[in-house]
Image (cartoon, rainbow, N blue to C red):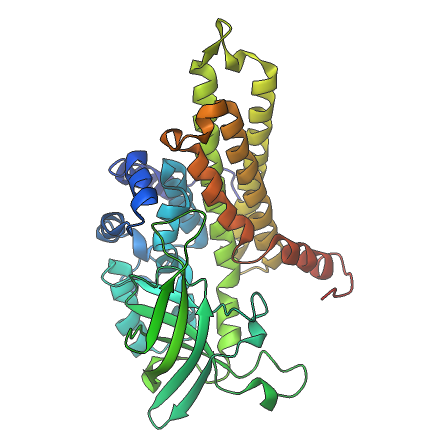
Length: 390
């Protein structure tokens, strides 16, 4: 693999940088204050064709890989849009890969082009309050009745459900108690269907950051899903969801690096310009050295993320690398955001200088879509050969 962007990747970066200049940091500060979904940013990304970056060309996409998607998402985050900008289009980029891989041709033609064009918005309905990261313990139930399924249950931390038209929903078609021991991953079925608000009560969760990309609890009571909206075979949804986990982790890594680089640029500029005791504070090694360490860590995270993306795009096993990239990039991004506030001193605590927003948003890739602790357990077990600890 090369350590430089290809000509195509560089063109993507430059084009997205140009588009993002239409949405300066003042725009994202306003969205952080009012909590309004960035509809015009989403529309602009759709009009420019970026929402279909990783979708097949025959269904309205560009047919590019996770490496190109990472360039896209990192550039958005690095522009100062941070996780607000990246999260607003995240599901468009790789969220519907289960449809791409396991859907019928009719489903792909019906479901993918509207997402690629930005004509619809979708949300990802997996996590439940009593299951957390243990997806095999999901209890939301879908019962087949003729040519439809009827769903009852609850989901939590569902992003963009306030504005979504569609939902990619994982539900249990076989009750847990009807499964043999060790078979809990069976009996889960995946659907991509209309988010019917007469049957789904969407309740906003007030949270720490990324206010303009909503997070929600969903209470599902009698949602009817046509059989033709089922993705793949009944009972194999867990397998289908797993297909998208590695690219999701790699994308989160790219976004965390983007946020970290935005923070580092802010801190470096401030250190060069801020004069105290008749000298720029950037002349002091106590200011220089932490920022230099941030640069080193972000560069290392970039290389780890690039390797994971290359492995995925070349059909190679990349579970450990994808998890490691997400872990390390989130930690490097967090350290850069924290140091940016400290470099700004009291002004770092001010919303006007943006870096406090960066710190609030960088917490997302540290927590989601999988915890740091589970990543470490995964690597200990799968790479180092240690016994399963949970």
